[in-house]
Figure 1 (cartoon, rainbow over the protein chains, first blue to last red):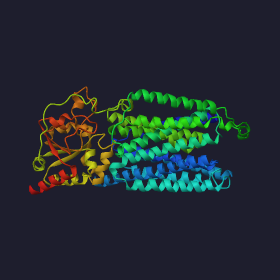
Figure 2: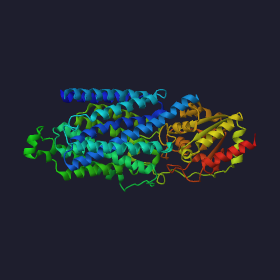
Figure 3: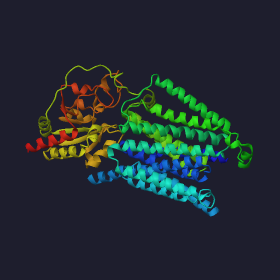
Figure 4: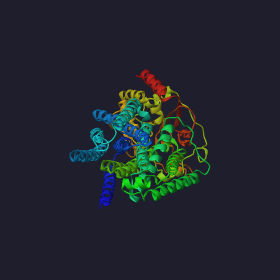
Length: 95
Length: 482
């Protein structure tokens, strides 16, 4: 059953992702791609746990690199998305 | 400490809710800005509570792992933060690519640590860990290549002889290695003490793991190398979906629902987004991956006729005394940083009573919607910008179309020439206007290397020069006509 709960989570999450994105205007494709890029930056959390559990120097090294990459994904993804979407605010004022 | 466990689980749950709500808000222009802030709060929450995780916190494991973690976050986070703040809007696509690649690399790294630790057990876990490692590695190396190409570090399209065969063989080898890892690894027991006693933790030999990762990385790079810049946004979007999936799979391996939900939601959303983009370009995703446009090879027939030049003065006069002008901006304008000048020119024309609109092709810029962002940055109001379906019927009542730095998206061969690689792509019907002025740096072919039939048409005039300089010249000339 445990395994199946995860399978249900997989399935429902997939439908959620599909539904959330459908009917999006073209002008938001780029920001949205960037925004979803930010959201999978949560891989940082997994990398932190992996590094936390690491024992040997090799594991620690890989874990360190993974945390570094994950943090860059999250931070970079946020900044870039925020900057792009910041411009839509100006557009609205221009209307 | 059950309370802490509860706190962490609750926080992950809230983070997952914030991610989904954030993405939902990002899909409408009105709420988009709030969306990223919500998702950002979710990320901060999830990251902070992870420091408390038993096994991560200092009480359980050596404290130096915590220190390493903080250092890694500080370095990775600050480099990405600063580079993201500094980067020009035109360079956004490659930044998205590289950050995405890093996420894929992190997912593959998680799998590598788990393989090395040898505490993982069972067919399902091993399969998902291996799949995540495969997809994450492909996304990592592929995104790095995409970044290098868009950044101009790697200019030429690189194509192996029998590229598709090489791709297929490498893919099969990689899958074979992955399957072997699962086969050898799945027998490992859930009992660490048993594993220690039987040496089962090392059931998968190191050389196998290393060759698997090398092959997966090579596969991502080799698939991306032949893809031209015009198709790259779709590929970046595809890798974005890949990273999402990889994160979801590794989330399962780590038993972390926040990773599963965020990863799979992005995987599904990214897949849909990739399809939407490919549809906007009329290029099926399989064509993009396996039949990249290579300009010289299949540029279609040569075009008869000559290109006729026009001066900035004449161009200014044509537009000044027109009643309707449509400007079609392309990536070339953005690269030249000319959008501010073009907007200034537009304001001059409007003051003279000319009706000026901007027409945006879905793939203008380097990604769908990229050009809207670039024009917005220059201050062009939203209501002057029209997309393809909204404006295509207007061209035959338009006096002058000014094309700045766009090429393939106005090429009429997409409608007429079945042998052309861009045949069937929806284009802006600039050729239907009474007059067309094309601002172009030189006489070369477009981004995809395809000759543009529009340039040879009777109603078309070429205005050579950089977009920035041309716009400035036109403004000068407009001022003399006041």
